[in-house]
Image 1 (cartoon, rainbow, N blue to C red):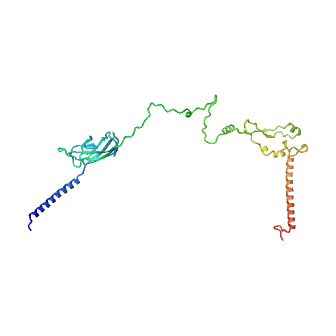
Image 2: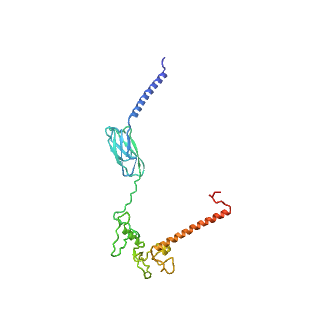
Image 3: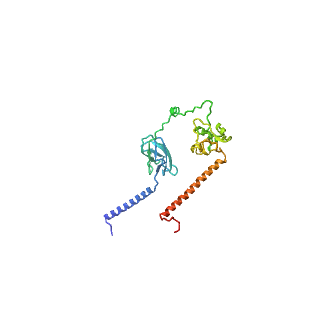
Length: 307
């Protein structure tokens, strides 16, 4: 089968397209497999005048120096240096005095001899510039201290002449006897009365009823202090009639025929109480007998009695 001129042209065109495609695919694969230069910053934001550091990798080892530009290729170079034997760079630069906002750090590298950009350049890294914080106002070192109002100043307590302030007691437990006595005196408590021996009065001496040597409770009145009432005054002097040496008595009139003291008065009191008890018992029995008699007359059988 012989090809015509048209057929030959078609076959040649197809072969040319195939070869061109093969070369294009090979170049694309080679470019895709080549590591591109990268740039990274250690700080994502900074203030004007601060220092920003970072690193770069995969730059050309045989190319020219790497240059960093702030925000554009036409801006001033903020850092320049040659990469290491492995194509790595480490840099640090000062942020220019610019307005707050988003900026870009641009890295460029040109081939030696030709001046053309190295494959993969320029590489970029973002940077945000923020406003610097407002300085804190500090008072000057020679500034006077603030004035304390007169009512807030501490005042000393005056001490009378010849008196010394009482030291604070370090005790934390119960107070001593002296402290308790001082406290009782400060609140106006009545002092404890001491027993004093009674002296017979003239009337008792004439009647022979005085008892020398008998202890009588007495106390000296303290001005401004309320004395505690005695048992006799609190009970209304009920027991005065049984006191052998007292002025009050349950018996009125002449007491010359009665013994003033001794066991006779105590025995009479006991017999009187015994008589009152016997009268009460007899009265109870009589009342019970009358009650039973009335129930019997009415035909009511008392409980517990046999029919």
